[in-house]
Length: 115
Image (cartoon, rainbow, N blue to C red; front, side):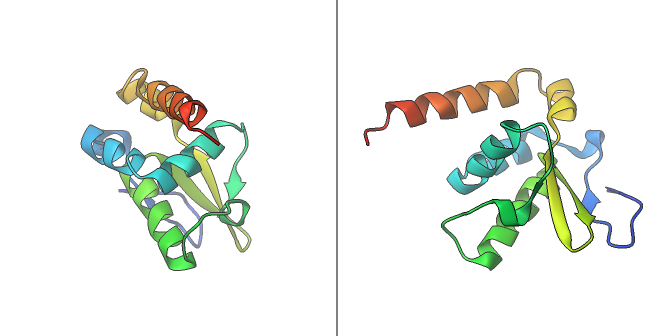
């Protein structure tokens, strides 16, 4: 695992440590997929507090950890805020088309749902 050089660094897998099974597992949960969809929709980092999720704070923390440890997102501290960004370029290099395919399928599924 490699760390960002800050006093409150979080462990992130390097590209060689990102595995398809872990990425697919991370993206298979509806809450985590909604986080990834929000991150994919913006070019900037988003604070954890930006996300309004239908789970407890501890469960939210768990979901962000799964995304970070699988290599889907990168988290960094900015003061007291934990900022999140999608590791789009790295995922595209490792698994060409995967992220875009998942996001397109998720959008299509959402559009099909009644209500």
